Length: 332
Image 1 (cartoon, rainbow, N blue to C red):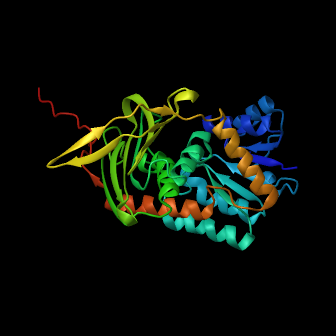
Image 2: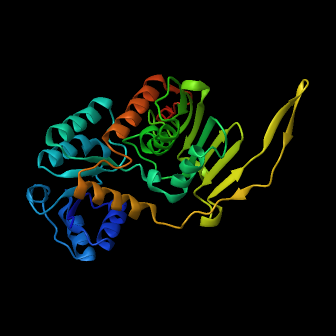
Image 3: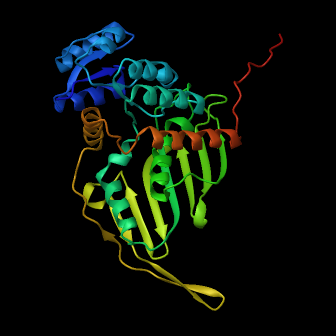
């Protein structure tokens, strides 16, 4: 039986705590704000503890970390050094060096690290992966990921680190590799120097390409992954109802002298068993705690995503940096 602790009693921490409690494994909660931990403890019928007490509890197998990103490296390292497995909400860290420090702690303590790349555990994406491997769209050619919303705008990390890890995880799982070419441009319109809208192009081996549109300030929500190949496309739209989340298009393009003929086919909605991605993600972490085996979003996968994030950050061109407005000088 697994016993899981939670550090971080904020908005997303509440979702994690609820799922852990429903799975019967939540064994204690902690937060730097004692009253937040006490509120969670009362709601989920567990004990509120200090972080040190949670780390020292020998009955706890693993800890879910849902604190602010700047705290991840220190806390994840401490958790691993206490002999426990750790689940870290994305992003793993804000730098590759920080992520590597967590990886080193994982190795020296022989403990698993799992990162909250939630969509890797979504039934529709798992089915999409299976369809691609089975050749439903022929040879993979291009992946388009759109993640837009009027979102939870942050001033401690940009959309690059807050939103892109989700789609990079999916793209790199489908390509089986890291990009060899990166072009990245964005703009900071809400907080000077913190990019809130981003456009990225990635190039992979075998002429596979990918593009990402990521934005916090869109008036509508779009979470869509389009995977195109030589024989069609698969579209995973997470804003749709379950019967429409995964659709296969088998349109055919063929040359006709100097132009092309496009033969459209009726889209086919593929059956996907309805599930709860966050609960399935927590089930995967519980399994890692019990077996010591890595999950889909393990430390190696997380480091691959972190390397790409760092390369994107290094190549990022800020096309619209909004400066803090200055008050005009007034004369009487």
